[in-house]
Image (cartoon, rainbow, N blue to C red; front, side, top):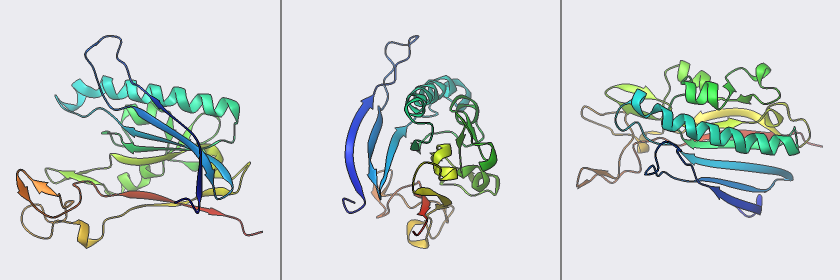
Length: 210
């Protein structure tokens, strides 16, 4: 929304696997701009899928996490209070090693200092809240992760207030074995008239009234 965000810079980073020259996946898009008075950097991701099995495909997502970590570190090196939002479909949950260890995240705001990022989706996942369902089990692959500056509010106006999974009834399958799941646009080659099998997520940022 141009009323709230002014683009300053954007760049795409390609993920490579030195051990697999045929590997190809989506780029990481980094967008920086002015959002309601603060300079904010947004990293948009879609990590490699779990095709072939979760464990077998995990090294690819670890590579994605390491690339993200490199980009985030470069931004924090310029400004320790940088406002950074790392977001996307990570194809892993907040507790998985790719997110927790290699991206270096925590679900505890008090521990989000220095290089450690705050993952507000952690508590939602622990409560059983997810963004997509598979065989009656919920995953929370769609995440928004924040830099310490957005948690504390230091060095700017905006700070973190809350997080939500947006799952109103009109986004849900209403009947059958998959009631409550995200309502797809297509199921196979049949048009279902929905939106996605993933629910959207969002964070709430606030600023002090002066």
